[in-house]
Image (cartoon, rainbow, N blue to C red; front, side, top):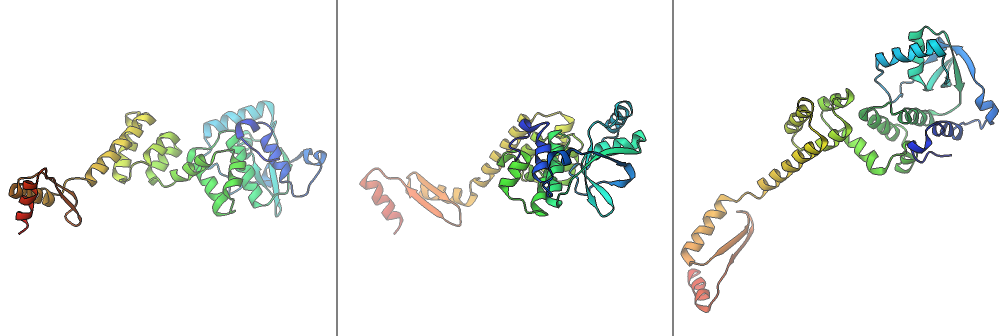
Length: 285
């Protein structure tokens, strides 16, 4: 069973993905069997999409685990003599803080691709990832595992445009990416910043987002104004052409239009009578 949308699959989507990717095709009873292992036998996954673990949030979770125990098992796979985390690194870290020595785990057999897919789905379902972590996780699924567009849409539950925009955010300057990771700039702000082609102006607006608390709409308007200004600069009058136009009109006495630039273009001279046409002909002699 594939995941169509994350919102609709909360609570069952991750379980469905794990079941569909269980390489040994175990039956439900075998799959549901939970073992308890020593915390020291578990190792984190380097491909974990979530890189930032808030200490305050971990401490809160640790207190909850002390009080109620670890209700949801950590999903792992066997790597050599250790158990590598597929889903549940935050719970694993909180158990360390809580001083727990043994935890329940659900062990499944999946390859690297499926492991990455499950890890990103778990985080996305809980909305634990910041926009940069999401973008990097998607990029990793593409670069390392060669996932195509159709598979990415099914795995993440996101539209094609959303996936493309997530990847575009990674093109922003490192300083802005850092602001996004720290939650100082939202995903909406980040997308609006992509409208600025000049890095200096982009960084300037990024600082204004933080200092002046600009809305996404305000940033979009600034970007639109910048584009209009750039467009106007492209069509600035050519001084040489302006002078030449004045000379022609002075000599012939007829309205003249020159389109193009000093490198190439065309000259239009309007006449309303035979006399005016003859005037043009005389000027060419």
